[in-house]
Length: 332
Image 1 (spheres, rainbow, N blue to C red):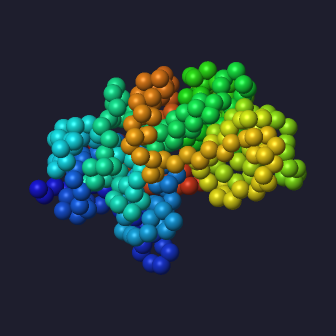
Image 2: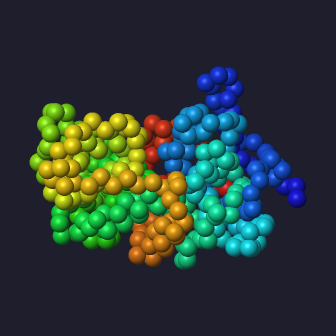
Image 3: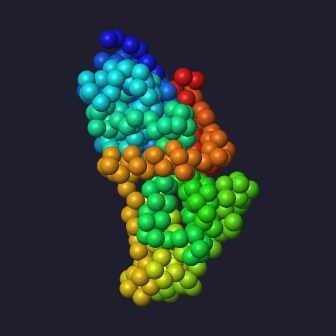
């Protein structure tokens, strides 16, 4: 089968210099795998921005096609679980990192990476959620199972205008929680309140550099998407017995913190992993996304772009200027 298609390819043109371009490729150039998929939609995540800019911690070898999310139809499958025409999703694992990803009209992947599209989501809707929505849903689920209950107090969401943060604000609000949204973008207050945030916390008020071991107890729970000093401050501000989820390090991978919140207040720090999360966990979370956490304001979170517009959006997400979710229409 010989078919030409379009994909973004990142190439190292000189040591440490990377160039992004939309190029024509052939199916024969795709890696081995049991399932060939015609991609209809993908989405833009911070990890994609890193991969697209030559970050070796995400992608070791170039040329490379980023995109850790993809949704489309099966074209061919040697795996009995999938047949031509099935609507499916691929996200996480090594997809888009060291295996050609979703910024391409076709992908070929191992069957164990493929998940049936959860009903009643459309392909487009699934990518508005994407890895960001899945990560947010995991975070809300972990707080609920801790348990942190709505009547115990406010939940802080950091990086609230980003993909994970905005999804988390909306999911928490529709689950009955009172949400405080921390952001460095005061102009996005209306956007956050429409998602369900009751309080807006300026970024400068979310970081404490006093050196105090513990801070005033404010939050019943926290969903942190940024790491670093903001995460440390959130932990020190969490109430007795509360929980903090951690899923990002855009601010810093370091955690400047002492043990007192854990041994004097019993605070729990819950790590959220989306990349290697097994299907036994992944599918139930996605079923919740498609049902009880199916957001009524989903379109409000989405900006749809074409491959030609992708480069500009990659620069935006790398500079902290993305709002909500950017989805890539591979047919546009």
